[in-house]
Amino acid sequence: MELNQLRCFIAVAQELHFGRAAQKMDMMPASFGRFIRLLEEELGLRLLNRSTRNVSLTKEGVMFLEEAVKIVSLADQLSKKFKMIGQKIKHPLRIGAMDSAASGLLPKLLNIYRQSHPDADIHLQEDKSINLIPRLKSGWLDAIFVRPPEKYDSAIEFKLITHENCALAVPLNHRLAEKESVSVYDFNDEAMILPERRLRPHSHDLTMTIFRAEGFQPKISQYADEKHTIVNLVSAGLGIAIVPAYLKGQSFPGVKYINLEVAEKVGGLPLSVAWMKGNTDGNLEDLLALLDKNHQLLVKDL
Image (cartoon, rainbow, N blue to C red; front, top):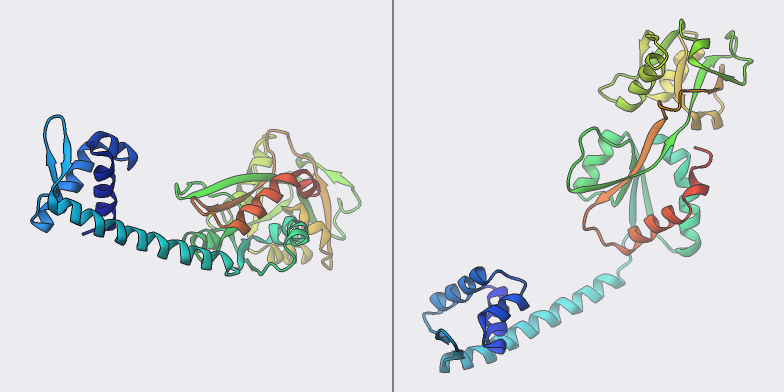
């Protein structure tokens, strides 16, 4: 016997009409009738008298209704009691972020969030996008700030925040180091360092797209996945690299970051926020609302 069967029986006992009772329970009439029939079969008793025009309770149905109402009422009270307890428990807000979001957008967003949630318990994890998405799905994280995947999971809600700007990283003694800004025409014949597409598809594709949009093919001298490794290789003179613009705020010995002009159709590196569909946690909803409200301020330097 299931609690929902009891709710269905109470509905039909109150309405004395299968159609109205099914509508009240937001069920198809056929499914609703099957619920009642299975309940009677399980009990070995007829609880309802049915005719083409009328529905009425049997003697046993009247007795069963009284007990069913008690059980459902107790179940509802139990649910309400522990939902209230759950609302009083302070749950940590668990956020995952890829490196550029952790360095650029999140510090500003969390500063705004703490102004209205001074006692908030926030846990922050920094990792690659491909590692954060499974942690979100498994319930270890409430929200993640990542590069959106090529294939979307229908259980996850993704919302684009912005396209991040890029810069060109060159050694300090490079011929372009004194320039304020460059375009691909200035370095199309240079040796390039870029990540493998398997691990950082957006960064890899961006470099390829910047070159191909102007009819060039990059000369790849080295593959490296971690941004700091790429910058180290640039410092060592093994090539130059297109990197997220947020790195300009991080001084690195032997490297100069130059503003990069790209065709409007190329855009930049997409940054999205993601959360599990159906997650109604109040802290998460407040964070997303503040992200929307302060969007222009949060993305202006990215």
